[in-house]
Image 1: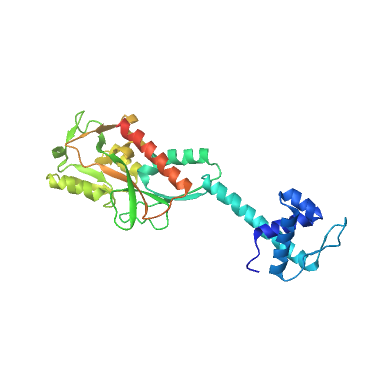
Image 2: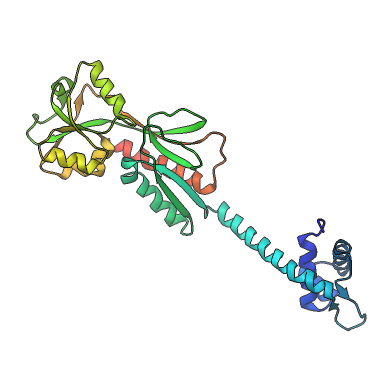
Amino acid sequence: MSDVELRHLTTMAAVADEGSFGRAAGRLGYTQSTVSQQIAALEKSVGGAVFDRPGGPKPVRITPLGTVVLAHGRDLLAKAEAMAAAVDRFKAGDGRVDIGTFQSVSNVILPQVVRRLLDEHPGCDIRLFDEETDRPQVRELDLMFVDGRIEGEVEHLKLLDDPHLLVARRGTFPEGPVRLAQLDGVPLIAYPLVCDQPRVEQALARRGVRPRIVFRTVGNETLLSMVRAGMGSALLPQLAAHSAEVGSDESLCVHELKPELPPREIFLRWQAHRTHSPLAARAIEIAVEVAGKIANRT
């Protein structure tokens, strides 16, 4: 049975539908001898006749064995057709993509990527996973946005540098840039010591600047609420400030830092040696385009 081919089953179904080898040949674009050869090959594989051939103008009749073969054969043909359609949709980008993300990217970059993927491929399946941790794992994800470099069997593409800004309650500092030395001893609301935050605080310490951390929170909205309340100021990456629309809040003031802190680096990563699906490849292209526009605005 292992040598039964789909073309044999296709030919059998055509003969059963048309009632003759000749009409089946016309339907399939074969010669009648080709149809006869394929039915003979099928009968050899299944070990018996699948059609009775009365000869002359009388239609061929399916045998009991042929009825069994045809029933299962039509199921196989339907599954093969469904598989071919699914492969075509996959090649066109109509598949599934799993993406790891974190807060700033989720608010600024990823919505544009998702919207364009859905516009281009309405039938695609996009799954998002929050991976904001000090040890992000690519695992089985197709793509992962990360801030900073991670080790392991991964490949990466740098999307942009995300500079740090100081967000303070208006009047806390004079308008304009704030020197890092002015942050020594001042109260700061900060992120937990994961992702890029340790690098920020180490850069401050190398310059002898030791702010007083009064509260740590992972949520941008919580952090900014405490700044508005007067509890302290905050160092935010530009993407985070942009996503929270800090510039339109009259109670807050955004300051550049002099000298600048090392920017947060945002990468797109995936497992090493992984072949991208067309949908994942398109997601990368869109992410690069969106990040480029953001970088050009800064």
